[in-house]
Image 1: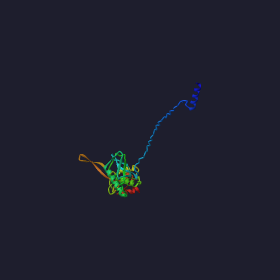
Image 2: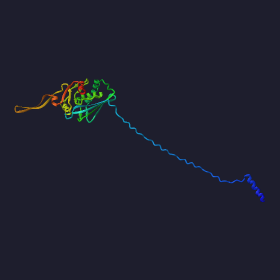
Image 3: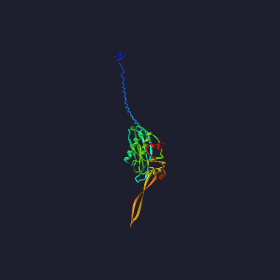
Image 4: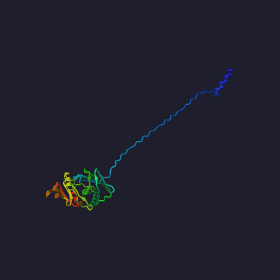
Length: 257
């Protein structure tokens, strides 16, 4: 019996029927998905563009005699800037009433300046800025000075600042008469001007002094107010040199000469 069992064991070993049951190890690989969150930072660049005005083609500054609301002579200042544009007339007025006749003088000044210089102003804007202590600037007496300043601006020329002028400007460039010559001459003298230009025949004025005249007629004293004429030389009266000019070309010689 023992021999039979031994034989069977030998046969089993030879056939390889006997095998060792092994343990199978299963390996699980866990893949961890890492979600990468990308934060995109947007950088905003602010570009500061300097906005500048049109190129100034020319500029001028002139002093103009005027009469304030109290009847006293004062000096105002006018600047004219010429810039590329569409032939417009622009005004910049600070704290004063700009009368219609002064606006008309500006339009007339522009036309005369174009004719005198032979320049086409259709592509040029003119900016008129007035600086004044007087609350009201009116009348046509600024016409000559405005025309001179306009010519200086469009040609980019310098003005003789020691000269001050008064006079109405006419459409043909002639200079018409104005009032209050004495007061304006005194204002020019106070501003240290050395030459005052006036229209023709206005370097001398006739002023009327008011006097009371009384006389006895019978038992009654009768009084009247009389106006006595007196001729005045403006230069002698005010102490400033005075010259008469008949048209804008004559005035130009004093301002640009």
